[in-house]
Image 1 (cartoon, helix red, strand yellow):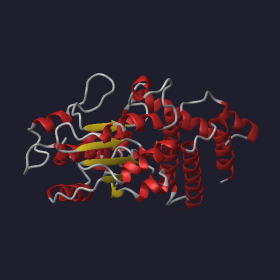
Image 2 (cartoon, rainbow, N blue to C red):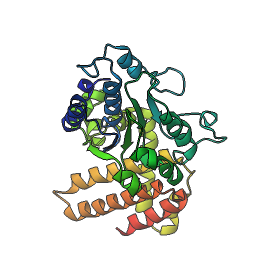
Image 3 (cartoon, one colour):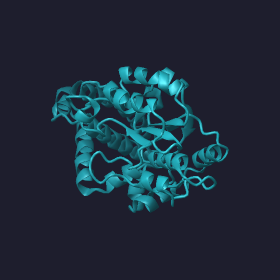
Image 4 (tube, rainbow, N blue to C red):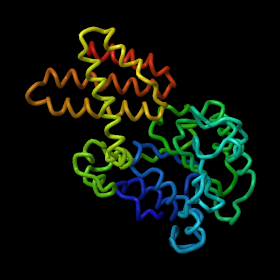
Length: 322
């Protein structure tokens, strides 16, 4: 994965290229932007450039360093074969590999930070060029994990770099944000989403600039499941009484990640409705815009591990009064 393969993010790519070419790569970056816009691919391209053996054409794509970086293991955990490019993230590794007895259900654990970063960063890069840690969904760092990372993040050993990927930078603790340099990634153009994901234009538009969202929306089973959630939510909003509406919150609980996707789908649906009604029914459009904000607030509650049934109950009550 080279910088040439990153589409739709010219500013971010130019910033990182320039830093690499000048030998001034920062020790800790924070890649901010929506999911599915190229942050992870760009992080891998950055790591490839750091470990590349070519002294002139960094990230050449031909040397051993580049080949190992872009080759992801076929068996779990699915991480680069290069020993100096280390992935960190919730659920990437089985519990026993990171010193746990249970899976990481709600966040990146302190055990993973200790086992993969603190222990590893005490040694020089295996191939002597650079050591790069890529932390996926860094906003999922638990407080103890974030605090354990701080000193190494602030004063890393020579040739050690960090890239924190996040779609929710506000969820990172202030001390993590202050120790990382932000590189911002924008939503992709609809036409580019359509090109990369190979989906119809309508799905690309609903994806709101995210390739991963477009691919999920293009899956028929996923689309039906999430559309059913939207339909039930809209029925609950229009139910004749609140007691009937509250029944929506008593549906079978979803996992946190799936609930997030369903709420995002509902937010997309309300946003599309608000836009469609803007010209001929501005009052209804305004109400749907308020409802859209209510769903976004519920999404924030999911990020703070709110109890799903209570969160949905409060959301429906507020949607009905919007």
